[in-house]
Length: 212
Image 1: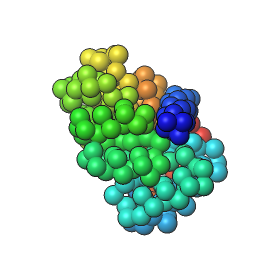
Image 2 (image 1 turned 90 degrees about the vertical axis):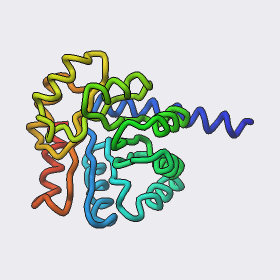
Image 3 (image 1 turned 180 degrees about the vertical axis):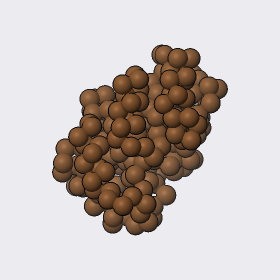
Image 4 (image 1 turned 45 degrees about the vertical axis):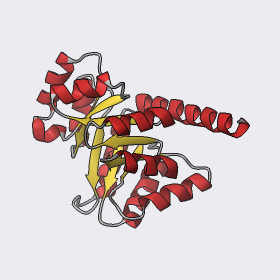
């Protein structure tokens, strides 16, 4: 019983700290690529330069083992994105993810994250999806892929309909676009950086750090 209480207390504390970091930093970097090594190096670079909100693509082979390794060493500072099933959510949480971005609205994922006290941004795009995420008491709605739906104009439209919902525009975007979302009232923004497609990924990360 004592161990379970301690674990619950620790989960609550990590959950609270995660929210505080997101609300203070406003920008959550989501990193993807062809290899875990390059993504891990980029995340370490961002962290060493003061960036605390970093998510890694769960579809990359080896992510679970990386999270477990960090958790064993007492580090709980990485989240994941591209979560599409409640099983993936469970695996990511048990491995040590401190936040999750799902690809779509899924009751199982939301329930799991609420039970484990892990911050969840639910993948939503239409008004119905956004409201369903809110109605199911998710922490926030990740407007994904926001840019392909109209970018800033779509965010402004959605925030006008749902001013009470915490919206996080999520997609490939520039630091300027991220700043525009925040200026328009976004709870946070989540730029996706594909390390294989960006010519100078570290330069781009630095630009987001400055924006942060």
